[in-house]
Length: 494
Image: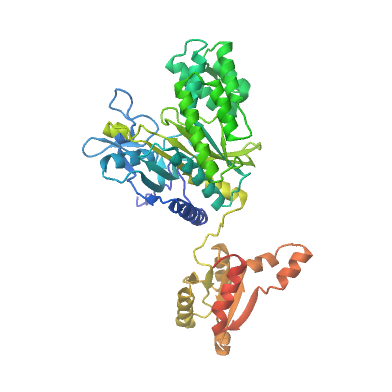
């Protein structure tokens, strides 16, 4: 009759708990990215996680109902509000509400965004983005800077040219391709979108698959059929020629694109913008080993209005099915000259790029190029003798004052369990003082990482080196801080 009702511990589908190792690694990564952004003169901005749905541009056409893909609800005033699904729409709203901002307005922002998408391996409904945007200029210098920032950011994180590529295209060039297709037969607006969607699927379905999507359609391995654009053979050849555009330099690619779409004023404008970006990149010595012009880059069909760019990691990984493939895209963006106009009626040009923080962190972990230390304190001061607690507290205070992250063991377990706790929580050094050490004016210092290495089955050369670095030693009380600093320096920890 008095049975206690217990709440079942559950987590929402598509969400996750993030433990200390990943949180600390993410914070370190964000700090490095922030340093790059600030070197370019961008300043921080924080907008709310909740916005009115109309500010996000997420109402269904001609309906008082939010579009799919967002977490939305009515507030106390019966207005639709939603969790932001990106950081760009809130930025556009902020700029529209603050017309006095200096132009160009350059800001960065990092934070979580939310999308109602089907969860899967590596796909969550809450994830972090780190954006940088320039609002209020149509100059291609701003777009070129986005490409440079992507290069500098990846390299600051230890991902060097050869392991990444920044790929650039222009939506106006893609419009020029549709114009070139239309020269061989009628093309409706819907057919034009189908052509762009087919181009966007090149990496997934290959050239033959794209040709099928441009023609009658394509049936995939599961049996699902996708209707095609129903183009003629001559029209399909135009797109195939476009997909085969290549060149050893960015200028050569622009020349080839110009030849294909020379009769399209919009397309020629896009090529001219790509040439401006190339010139700016070349002036700053960002070569094709870092930034290329890639005609297959499409990105947001209804979003971008000019240059588009994405950063991909080219090193291979093994996916869930055991297949080796490139890691893929971790950063992307482009020019969006119409977003602020939704609020003001005036065209305010803007461009920016966004880093998928969680995906980039996964890449760094795959490469082994980020510290996965799970603790904020590298040292544990144990309590061997509880009557010496005041002495331990004084010792902890000295270590912290010297800038060394130090934790005092506050549990009730014996010394063996304290050492286990130190190892389990990622500590590097354990400090021990008993009555004997205190009487001699000494402190016992244990290098936990080295102790773990010595316990492994390792080669003779490695073992000889390790045995020359004592895993445990006693030092004079006054030598404790220099000793700990030397140990931590072995592991590149200050």
